[in-house]
Image: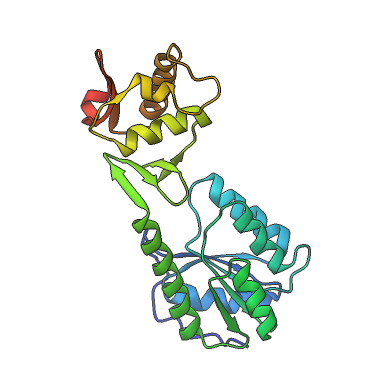
Length: 249
């Protein structure tokens, strides 16, 4: 059992503090873990059932404010922890997961890792090790994300997930618009001909429809507050370029 530590800090946490979701059906253990993480200036939320955990994860994704990591027990009421892990990865939720469980046989560890767990820790554990492991998997995730992320203005593209975001907020586009913007982004600052875009393997896209597609994409990136714009190059095509915030108006 994790024992409560004396709280050495004022629990006023900084705005960039880690946010951890604790999924644990034992209320006293969940509270002890939460208290000790709070003592290390780590923000926590607690879910005591599988459905509660899914609801909190979905809400975090909807608000575009994901957790930095999840501490996940495997034996839970409602939905088993391993099923939660599978559901997260099937939704492309890459939030790091540390499985904290009494079920720590080799077969279970292998099963968890193959289903997307980032680390395993057996109960009972020392709080200092739990905190160190959480920080380690969060760092690895942040580093991996940065490796795959390219930014132009305040518009970022993740080559691993294929997502665009503006100042960290995911921008959702229809498939054709998304593919066209991806081409423009990859060749940012360079012209892309209308013929090239029209000849891509996209259902419903023709030479005549490209201008309409460009209008829609321009509206989306402007509404998202992106400091980039699509310039029409007369007789050539289009080019994605940076603009100042004042030029957006």
